[in-house]
Structures are given as C-alpha cells and as structure tokens.
Length: 167
Image 1 (spheres, rainbow, N blue to C red):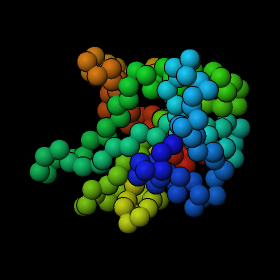
Image 2: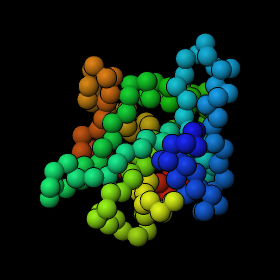
Image 3: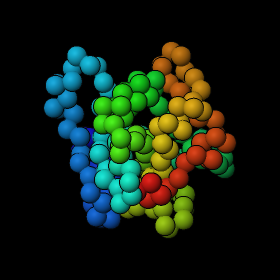
Image 4: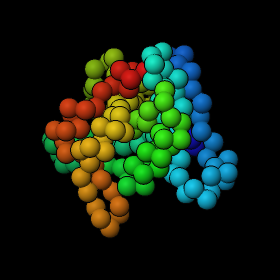
C-alpha cells in the first residue's frame, strides 16, 4: 500500500471509519520475496465473517467518455495482478481469499446511492469488489501488448458488489 496513492489512502480511511481491522502491506519490505517475483497486494482485511481478504486496490476514475454518455465500469487488471494475487492466496491458505477492490473516484455530477459513497479529503469514492476466483473465470484478454485482462460489462455487473458485502 502506498499512502501517496489517493485511491489506497481513501480505502484505508474507509476501513478505519468503519472500524474494520486491517493491515496495510508495506511494499518497501517486499524484498524478502524478491526471488518469488510476486506482485504485492495492498491490504489484509479481517472480516467479521469466516473469510479474511487479501485486497488489491485498483483505482479508476468514474467519468463519462463523451458528452452525455454513461460512465463505464472500468475493471481491467494485468495478468501479473491475477498471477500474483493467486499465488498470495495460496501462500495465506485457508481462511484467506483474494479480492479486487475497484476504487472509483467520482467526477462531478455523478451521484451514486448514498450507502455506497465514501468521502475522503473532499473527494468522493465508491468501492466495489470482485473475488479473484470469480474474476479469473470470466477474464478476457483486453490488450496483449499491455498484458491486461478485464471482465465483459455484463459479467462484471453480475459479480461486483459494494465492498461492504464482503466484509
């Protein structure tokens, strides 16, 4: 987790405000795993339920592409994200599952339902999440050049839930 990345800082604030126990992963201490070449995740989130979460925050700006167009739920990740998070899920074992948390920073004019809105440093965010296992099953190559994948819009809409659903 990098405090300088506003999406991650906003999610940490979201957890703190709701008194959800968590550990922010310090990427600077990742050197111990250098030989493994595992891409890091951002938070270990302890749930009130049986499953605890390895959360990888994916910051996206929620904005319309063209005048009057509806905003798009961008949900792309890299293949390295999938591979690294899958390996971490194996390392942590039973009781821990991996979760992609899409932190949408809202542009002016977009008004989500109040129950999913989080305000941090005068900016508005919506946190929506998909379990890694579900994401992997539906992922499609988005850009071979950039090594990115995503879920088709309808599949993402079916799988995504407000992050509090998982906690």
